[in-house]
Image 1: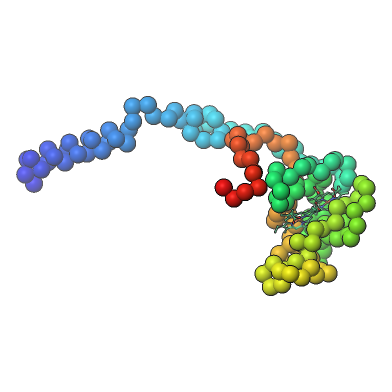
Image 2: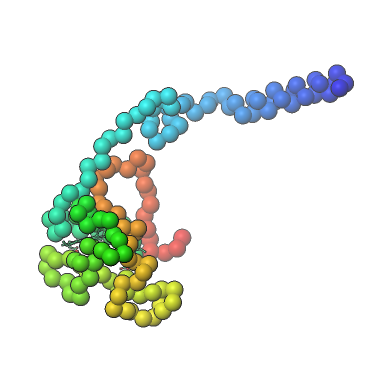
Length: 156
Ligand code: HEC
Ligand code: HEC
């Protein structure tokens, strides 16, 4: 290789390094969610499981219309949901709302949106059978990152 070509390469390489090495790099304590050194092994704050009995705690207002409400009671005794056993349905597959009693499943849960979107059936739709794939337990865990999501009801 010619001398001039080597010189050109050296200049190009050092320019490249300079570009990926900005003057004020992000300190490693500010890189991740843990807010500390990347070399630290943090102990996450314990998450307190909700062990309240159904009806003991008030339902939590959903963050936006159409979102699956969080489960305001413990679920430990009601899981797992299997093909033969679904404790959630034992309580929530009711037709009428009575004060202090489980809220009935909404008509959407009896509708097979893919094959018969206009029919409200007697049986819960297969896609709604595993309740906990959409409904999560209420928790008082602090969010790791501030969430400024505000739903306006429009697709913006
Ligand atoms: C022993 C009866 C019982 C069982 C079993 C049960 N629930 Fe509930 N659930 C209740 C009662 C009572 C409430 C409080 C009244 C209400 O809002 O429905 C409630 C509330 C809820 C709510 C809040 C509804 C709202 O409008 O905000 C959701 C979601 C829910 N349960 C989901 C579940 C899921 C998922 C399971 C299974 C893992 C389950 N429940 C098992 C009785 C039960
Ligand atoms: C595919 C996601 C999904 C699954 C699975 C699902 N849900 Fe829901 N659920 C929702 C959404 C979304 C809403 C709120 C909108 C609506 O009413 O359809 C809701 C609403 C509810 C409500 C509140 C009804 C009201 O009138 O306020 C209850 C109670 C409930 N679901 C219980 C259950 C139970 C019990 C199961 C399991 C048999 C289940 N859900 C499975 C998404 C789901």
